[in-house]
Image 1 (cartoon, rainbow, N blue to C red):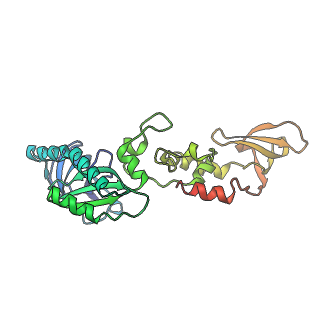
Image 2 (image 1 turned 90 degrees about the horizontal axis):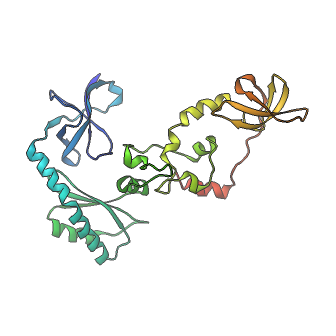
Image 3 (image 1 turned 120 degrees about the vertical axis):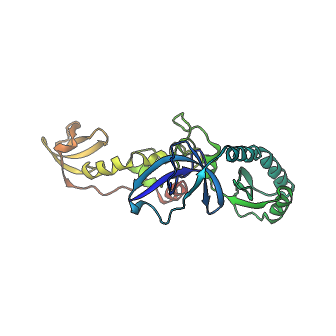
Length: 287
């Protein structure tokens, strides 16, 4: 077991583990740590606790110190410079006629570097832009091209559920989602119905997938030949979450609803291709 504490550098960013040493740390405390980018200002989101060694990559970097009032003031000054930096960068992007969209700006705590995050349809030659920005800010300049998911996480939006999108509200890291999940959950394969503000598949498809994975193992599929308390029949309709299926008896009578526990699959139906290859390629682009 190893003692760790969890630190975030952005309100809904990824959580990084550090060695708490002997500091008395509580959730919400501000701390100073050393990262690959240099000295950074972060917030404790996981109080010191022991976790299994398999959950971390050693060696852990230690917490340097609990942030002082001076450190907090320095962080506030860095944050106050963001709007001005974005305005300057947007003006320079326009002057150089670059096809890029500035999304966010971040100053490192030590003041040695400023990072500009942008989106673009393809590669962008921003060498002259970097030179101009370096002349203005007198520090190292780094431009990072990010994807549409990252842009939505930074900018925020409202999802189809009417709530703030997950990645901006509470999701620290993106989870892998796929078209297969939408199909297994019986959702409409209309891109407008299953894609989020970023234009990619909604992250919430992942939340219930483990339940569907278990239900699929015990639930007959449409078209399966099954044995029921009333005889043999063909599955016509499946309500997976309710654990119910509607079966048409071999006699051709009207549909009868059964609990999945009362059925035994005698012959599985061939899996139907729900979408053609062209639509498959279009939908794959949402992942």
